[in-house]
Image 1 (cartoon, rainbow, N blue to C red):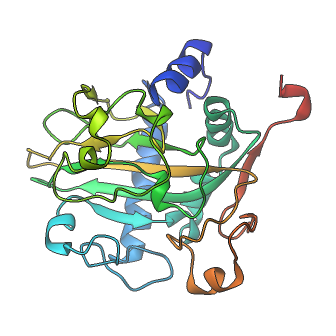
Image 2 (image 1 turned 90 degrees about the vertical axis):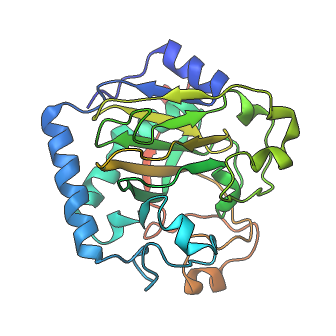
Image 3 (image 1 turned 30 degrees about the vertical axis):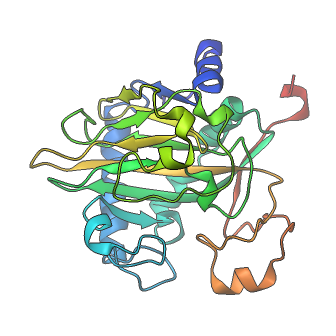
Length: 277
């Protein structure tokens, strides 16, 4: 795993809100990630969440238009909770160290992982923000996006609008069918160009949860598969949103409570004090 970050990569991430890391996985590691994702997805039998019966493509209470959003991608969340091999991949401290160095956080917890499988002729992923959907509000929150297939302009690569994470807020613009709907919320960004992020299989990107981003439609007869994980800085507190929390967890929490449940949000990296400078 190519987990060492240069000062230039860290600076670029902090300035632009995203960074692409080529050849993140070697050939053997890519083969393993593909195998583990396929196994974990197969075990879920179409269930989007580990603890709910909602199937991919069904109304999950977030995207009411299941017919459209079900054709954006298959989305399976927290596979690490239901597959031991996926747990080993997702709890790798090297991933947490990368997230900590990019974000500046002392410690990193998993918020949730996601397999995102854009099927042949899949709909585009409209421009959106991530962090406003989550159960905590922290400007350092970020995600890794690992390409399991070549992500191209033709099959649905990511697009980012650089530097928007410096000005966006925790208010949730939502996500709709319309690629440009977010500009109704942030009209000042309508004239900014988006940057495409095509990646070879085995490469990855990190992006800040407040950086505006989306993805092309899949205009090919093949899959565009990605494995992602969202990261929460250690010390984040509950903001009142349920998101991936269970009803039981929600009932035990009040706004301001520390989100440190190791069964739900394990700490995968903590910077030693001697390394903090």
